[in-house]
Image (tube, rainbow, N blue to C red):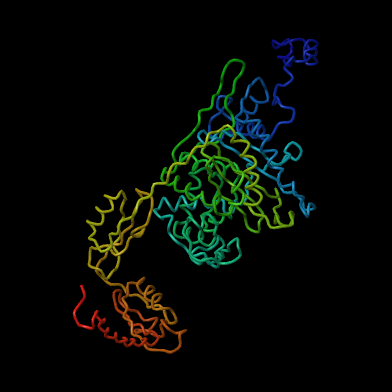
Length: 569
């Protein structure tokens, strides 16, 4: 009305000018945050309301521009989920690694920290620390992407358990090329362990505790990278994840907020709660918006609880055990360390039953190897985990200890050799689903030739057991070379392709050769029918001669009193 003029129903020019020059009389905090120096959470909340990715804030406008205008006009009371005491505890813990002066503080940019805490059963964001001094640096470390290293492995485990792979499954810890799974550019993925050397075969309990990359590289081949991507996205990871095997070692960046969100799903036994930072929005006494937790089951409870069972390992006897072996409280916890390629990013994600927290340490914007800055070897377990512990010790005060639900496992019965109908009923009676495929096999047509998971495995009830049903047609198999192996190892190798073995021994006086295979018939490389027999020729030490028994001397009769031959009383 001020600019219309009196002829159009407005005011006179003089009156209009006086109105323009006068104060509006609005409160001094209109359009502001009510805080002298807003923490990162305030900036995050403003952006969330404007972008409205979850469709929660339409009450402030149907478009980003309308919602931004509603914020700038002021008059809104926005109550956030932030807990100031937790935030202070995070700020203090974030600075703890600098109690030990870095040997090379000239490396820039200096490493920084992100700490995000969620209320496990609601998704409420209680702590959101973006850098050690956000007010000064204005660096976003919370919603920017950083490679998570081995802290991504829980998503691989969950996808594996969902497919019925048991936690007792063993995989080789030998580092080197993984030809079954090329990189995105077509080159062969070459995996190395953090220790820098190969390890033997490990089950998934121990491989998780010790964070053995080579084991998880082979596990993701069996699981399928696309299934891991699906699991991670269901759990709470929102960033794009290409379906590459290198996901198993955390090669693709995710955000600390997402990591806390994903781990919250496991802490909550498979129920994911979308993270939120606003409790309510009001104008005067009128409540415009009140948040209701948005929680949905995305992973079955048995799968999530089994992941929790394996994540005991890192904090009790694995990569973070030294941090929690003393000085931790009564609260059961689960967690996983992460160290990205060349030690550029350091992580620890962990949770009690009530609180889930992710910690990241690294150089924002221009990552470099953290040992260059600190002057000594650093890992997620030596930097990020101590920050997590120092912070959570303050946060958990006042919380009662709560145990995690037990992971209920069921033994898979053996159905090999059974008819298809009997095998299916046996597995269903044990609580498993069944999938069948007809395969070439020398076994009787219609009987079970293969089963996966194998008989005796301890796995989650209700998963699918895959059966290979024989068509009665024996396939051709190629005999492997077993020369130089022990008879036991050679027999096991041939049994793996369903070839039976007969052993012919030849004496040797060389103890180094005893028990080793020196030949086979048919020879290695020969194609034979499955179910055929192979003769192994093996060295054997000469049989020890049977000792001649020493004759037992005939006892002489004891003399009786008086020299007579009669027995005394």
